Length: 107
Image: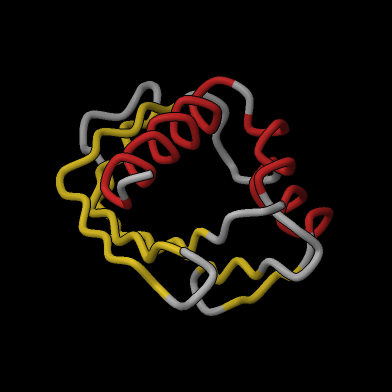
């Protein structure tokens, strides 16, 4: 699969799931996955899922600005860098952030 198409499909699924059912994001991570969030690192499905479901807001909407990706390593991985804004329910100002993913296919 084309790295750009794979990255876009993943991001569409990830952010739609984040916006509608954050608890389901745990299935996208593995036990060796690491999430870095504001200087703290969480490793493993349970720790990452706990962090994401424990964020201090319930409803949100992600709006992607830019997506940059490139192939990574011999395992057909893809590095994905996203610039995005997050609109929280009841807030006027959107929060701008960036996020990076290293997608590695599983067998």
